[in-house]
Length: 530
Image 1 (cartoon, rainbow, N blue to C red):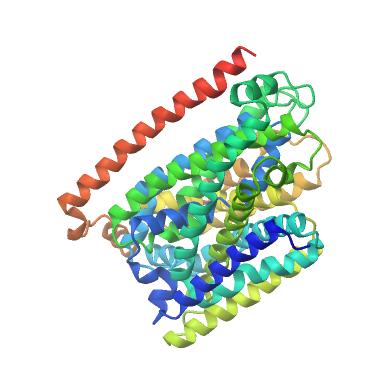
Image 2 (tube, rainbow, N blue to C red; image 1 turned 45 degrees about the horizontal axis):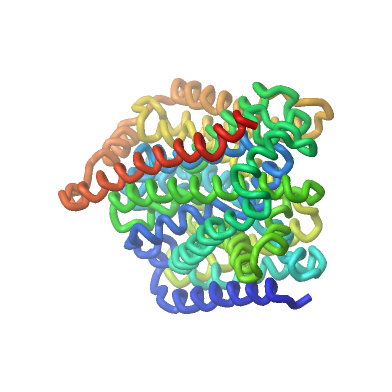
């Protein structure tokens, strides 16, 4: 069904495709294709960091959880995950960039002088990224189904075409530019949309007051949330939020779809400044989305949870604003899917097949072929499975947090972690998380929070790191490779760059104060007086 919303979405897709074609024509070698020539400015790194992270999982999955009565826990996760940019850039990202690799799995291989751990890192990357890409594709398809009236499966095909073509052709250079365009679009969409939704809910303070006394979703905006939704106690819900706040902070810190953006930055100061602005961008966008979803619940409590923002775009705001919001949701999905697809192609060629593909043109062809094959596999899975956006997204996140988190940080900050310890830590963290995910999924009762897959995976990973490093201690080669990471390049000591970076830190402090005051005035006080 052709309507104004469909036309707006199609126009946005054509823009991304044209940008990808334009950029793809400028690619000369694998350095351009993989890491955009290592010369990207702050705005492009920020755009790609945020756009690759805030997929349809945020716009449809997280908002669906809030709509269902899980406001405070999701807000806690949202705020905690945003701080991961600061920790990640300082403790991991800048050092990975300093190693001058093309992919993050290559960093692990270079750091530990081990092809085996490089391939394991590439394998876990592909597993997690495929899950994430499936979530993004299902989100795009859900959106397209709602605005066109076409079947879900037809929309899966449209979703596949929407990001596959320009990603395969343009590589990282195209992804950086289109990500930034998409980030600016969905940030504007979130900022513009929330006043209209709040107005339809009776005004901001009235809406919060009504939610505090909601009958259809009791406790939705209280600290304990709706006790009929996930855990029957407030303590259980807050514990879940704190655990997954840590999970997603680690994902932001070390995941390949975030850290790989730093490889494209023109210097380490760009890495640091980008992290600050990305943290503010993620926090601002998610906070506005979560309040919007809660307000929609007070207006219409009978919606399919994951579709609440789509309904709001079509029913609670002027048409042009609704078009912008839907195009923004689509952009969030397309940007993430394009990033994930490019990572799959890069890891296949650079980390699995590097000894057999040594010519630049051949590597480009193999990378593009790998992306095409991976996208077809995900297409098939999405085609035969119903949408599970939130569940699939959280699976991908916990896998990376469990398998990569401790190993990534220890690879920089531990003198005792050996390649055997790193391999065993990554492997056991991955297996522990996946096995518990499978068992808990088959278990019919309430799965206790202290046996969460992330907790088990982290514990097993740390055990593996310790045992492996005892079995085979650090070699002189590994020690020397780690010490190289702490040699600061001379061009990073330029005084003007240091001043700019310090100034960005002050902006973040001011932003933190504003966020605190906002929650006090716009949430805490109305709830307490409700």
